Image (cartoon, rainbow, N blue to C red; front, side, top):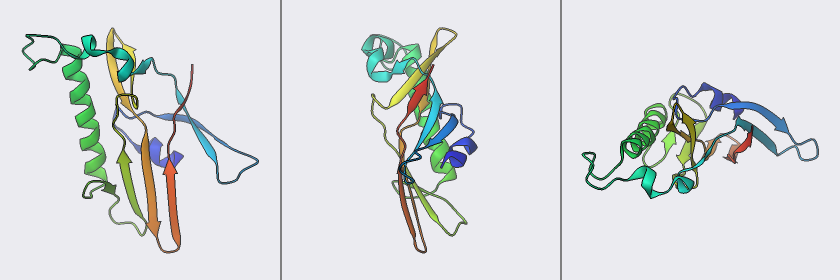
Length: 143
């Protein structure tokens, strides 16, 4: 899973920096990411929306953030084709990936005074042969 996350090339998908396997439970591992500044839920509506703005009510930051979210979803779906989810092509294992979009699961980091949207919470399922594996990625950050 760690290697799969490293292969994502989209700038709005969180990049892992390390992995820690629990020595007491061989079924548990933790993926570590660099720190973020917060979630979209913490930004509040004043950052996302602006009355009378030419972006149909979105502020300039809000428009860029939503465009980044849709771009990220498009990137994942273009690499993992599937109906409603995403699944890998030309592999013996079927990979199904679901990105969970919720304002508490969409992160941002301030870059040059603008919030950069980062997606990372996702559920990934492997199915094939005798292997059925479900991975829920929970984000741990260090600063």
